[in-house]
Image (tube, rainbow, N blue to C red):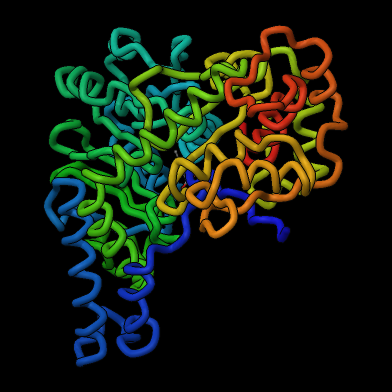
Length: 443
Ligand SMILES: Cc1ncc(COP(=O)(O)O)c(C=O)c1O
């Protein structure tokens, strides 16, 4: 049987372009290629595309179009927010507050501000469930604090932070509030007024738009130094001829997200919970808050297996094609427990629940066993005459790693909930373990 392609569960790393995004972008690459700053018909057509996209982004975020600044991605939006505030307000103070679990786009920018520009940064920890305490944020504010930056959803655990509560504290204390919403936009409702933030970063490629385009929402009246200097694009806030096709794509992606959010959210939640239940029952531990989490994200740890062995195995099997596995580090590591952690981020192409089950449920190996199972299950489950998902063949080397051996020999808590008739326990847990090492490479 032809091996099936691995199920893509790395949607937190990046997403494919939505077909509607591809369609929307095409004319701006081929026909409306003008410079939006040009006054002639080609320029005006390009400008119209950018204007429509700005309105589409604003509609999703609940802000005014002139509060949308297009950037070259999520990292640039974060850099612009932090450095822009720090430089524009340095006569008022020199202190910023953030958390230990931010994306490097924020953490490294903070370190740059400390090392090169003499600012001071407080890095707050998170609790066992991965959340920062608003009271700790309040306690960290000093008369010199300019900005609080807390991500809306963590990229590894999916845990949502109490942004509205923190923004309320910031507002009362006269401090600006930024949130990195790269992971949350398109997955949960993100409304800048409800959140009460002054600045919010969006990364296009996390919501089915192209890579290299993003947005910084800037509340009207918020003073920022520009990061990129030049002509007066984006209201003087970001110089450079606009990435018209990318911006049009991001606008279209926001429109699709807005339309699909009510149905996509419960669909992803059901997929994630189904996978989570199977894995938790099989001995894996969920990391992060049980409910305050992105609907698509599951982060699990395997107690008793050696991280190095799992990672080495993943790499041997060339899983870097799905994103290089990392060890949980720092505060995320603490929030995620001690063992190796794996992240599953489901998305639009993460098929139906059966496709996820399929990986977990794979029973005895071999052609004869598969034939027996298919005959037993009948057409509805992909037996003779059926159209179900085909079983991926067993990749070479499966089950020979140290971690797998440990699981087979010593991990007493391991029970497989999805054992098939006639299947021995050892086989079943081997399959679940193999499935995880196959498709959940990120920490
Ligand atoms: C939380 C978070 N912030 C920022 C970024 C950076 O976005 P970009 O890749 O568009 O620069 C990412 C991307 O991984 C992210 O997950």
